Image (tube, rainbow, N blue to C red; front, side, top):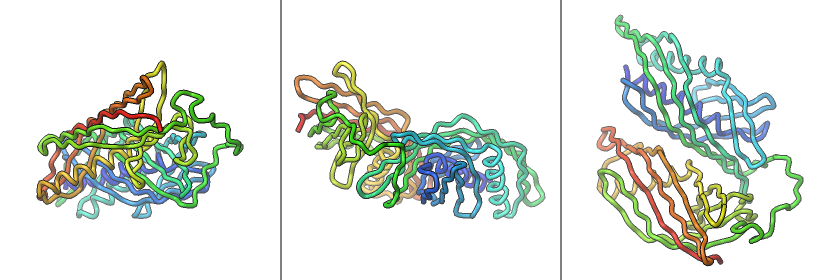
Length: 344
């Protein structure tokens, strides 16, 4: 019964995060793919994924899940495609209650919700428009407290749980056009007018990836770092791209002061990269695994320019886990790389 409750909370958590970051233009509709990891006190941990539909209107957004249940809220979108949102608290609580009650019913039990308190949360998202269409990414973490009574086989059990979750997701729309009030004039400064703005660099270095319980992997890496503005990469001023190969590109934002740089990678796509790395490591170990998840706990990206050379160091610390031979396993990892290169 407790496992059922946790999975019900997983499903509702995922949907909250999806609605936050899918906000595009009024009138647009997105099909979101989302993955999450969740921990609930006294109920353990679980992982889930799903597909939801989001419709955005002049009044806000409406999210409809795979079961036909929905809730609404408001959202804002700035000129750079960054998204902020606020779910309607009453609508969200009603939605969560419906999901939990229905989940209990599917298990032959009944649930009576005393209270659902929405705690602190952090949601970030972005819409990026390129030549082939628009990509929408998001990352969300939040906490909620749920009080309820579960009745099964005539026995009632009072349940109070604190839920913490980390969620990442993405969507693609080939026909999406982002309206941000741009007059269409090319006001971007030419390459080189603002330090690194508009420049391309070829970088070489060594990657070190350590995962507790799986050992350490080291390998050489060659990438291209492109600093915006750059129309061909779809980069605005203050954005950058790390091009590993044609179909593997990671985006972020950068700032420069006195020859020192700060490079902040967008976390959602980076988490997906780390998941792929973990899956490869588990495969190499001959493990029977499923449901690999990653939750980034910290990221740093200091860089410097000196004597015409760029040096950059990316370090990511994260929690992770998977089901191995049917059992849930958790661990932690560190991914780091030191790169040096010259401008092209």
